[in-house]
Every structure is written in structure tokens, then in C-alpha cells.
Image (cartoon, rainbow, N blue to C red):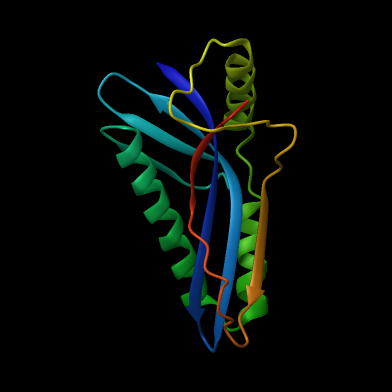
Length: 154
């Protein structure tokens, strides 16, 4: 079994009960390749995981699961403030066991034990996970941002 430490950045606009929220999140996840499947385990946020036949499929399912969690929170929140608080709590849930495995995988990348063909390397000491949740009062042009593809943490 191989493990890979990833960063990911997701950007979403979510509609709730009387609000629209802009969410920008840079999180961490641990990829694990097994014989016939690949898993993506959220480190921060730590409450989600996904599996697929390969990395791309597992990451796509992870992304869809994450978006579904946001939609559920928005549907259940009475207002923007409640939604923002729930997103922040969700984001700050860290799976300590998976975080330890992620840290070990980062060290393996630094030693050269784990290759990162085709992936940008980002120094794990310089990139800290974050979440920003903003109320969209009046959408502004030019604020569109695409998700950043996975990058290997080094």
C-alpha cells in the first residue's frame, strides 16, 4: 500500500436559507493506493473519505462528497452566521491518526521515497490549511476561481 500527502483547494458558492456564501478552502488529504482501489481520506477537514478505482476517480468522489456536506449544512442552517460556524467546525475537525500518517508521508516525499510525477510540490511548512466563508451581498465580476488540482505536500 502506498500513501501520498495532498493539498487541495476548493472554491464554492452555496445558497442557503436567505443567503449565498462564498467558501474557499485549502485542506489536506491522504491518498492511499491499495491493490484494486484508491482511497482519499480527509485530514483537514477530517470528516470525509472517498474511494475509487484510481486517484482521479477517488478525488472526484471526495470532491462531490465535500460539496454534498456543504449543501446539507446550508439547507439545515437558519442563516449565514450559523452556516459559517458549521463550516468552520467541519473544517477544523482533524483526524489525528490520519494527520500522523500524512506527516509521515510528507517526510517520505522529502526523502524521495515517494515520487510526485505530474504534480506540483508545495512545501508543507509554508502552506497551512485554511477556510474562508464570506457572505455574498452583491456578486462582483472577476471573482471566479477554479479549484486547484491536487498538489503533493513536501
